[in-house]
Image (cartoon, rainbow, N blue to C red; front, side, top):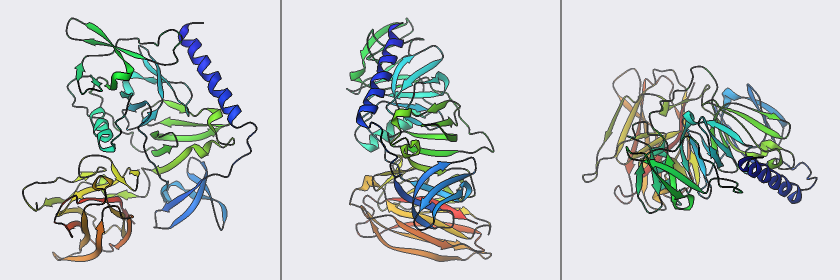
Length: 426
């Protein structure tokens, strides 16, 4: 048996034994309860039991088990990312928390506390993050670089801030007796000089850029958050015995470890489920009609789709939000609605990056068949650190809608406004 295979077998046996010792003959535990948000704005507490091809099985009090059509679900649960473990970043936007066992000519081989050993084609791996930054904003900046298809080259990012252009070798395997990679061989320069870098000195490896990923037309796409901090884009997910199997949008199939199932219930590994293709129309998926920002002094702020105004992931209440709009006071962002929608729904808040600073007023204006814009919604003052404010705005016969963010208490300082899950309802 070669050293690599021996290490994998030893690691698997140790993990299985740990699972058995930690929870021998564990009874089936009650599934965790989380907030379930439906397309019509209904919110209730429910436990997730299963996801089928067309529906989600949940239990709620009163009513017991019920199956919700996937097209009617906005989201179930909440997701918070992690900064303590190795993460593999994929071209479809997935982030898989897993250790790297080896790099082969055609694949990156991974295994995690939650995940079975998986061979990820090298073509779908954008980065390996060995030590994610502790600061959420810095983590988000690193992910933006990983997904930037216009990066000039592959990069090795060191903890001291240095960067080295180059590439990984065709094959990279752990030392004899090691479970995972402990150092990286990196080929630099035209002469092909190879340097050896200990993993503890690395932040990340950004692999060869140029991947252009587009989701296939038609099919299903589910955003799935897992309790280990993984956040993946899946075409399908199903239970297979004590494991969950997910077919990623990028192509690979991944599966959870059987011993990772709490009380034999693999669905308890899921903390977030959000269909991204259905009857919900997110404003961030539509082309804006127009945008204008009026600086309080001289600094101009662009808007961002599915990102905060600073360019990071939308964050509020310690959670990561996949869909929404990031704006800064004082600004207006307009969209064409064409009289097709009944309501605008969203959750309004300042981004976590603002801390307890910042204060804004959110407004929604609508335009009907005339040129007049009419105020349809105005919030009170929303301040940093406050809970998200859910809104439902009447859009019947509205041809256009304009979102306004204005400053309130302290001019425009820290006014990082988020329109979380801003969506149009027919």
